[in-house]
Image 1 (cartoon, rainbow, N blue to C red):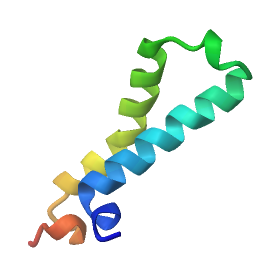
Image 2: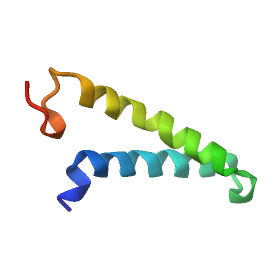
Image 3: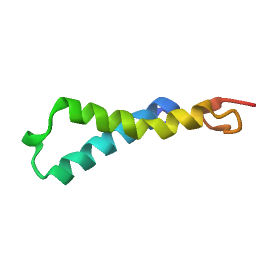
Length: 64
């Protein structure tokens, strides 16, 4: 469970939740393309990347 609290675990959790939300919103898994899944996942990860790059944010093991 320690992995899920790391930055990589956060990436995976957010990516999968965005893809699953898109599947539910479309209503049919067969209407979704791989490109849409990757786009939704990458866009959802952007806030985590911004937090990681912020020097004032002490999460993810990054110290000031």
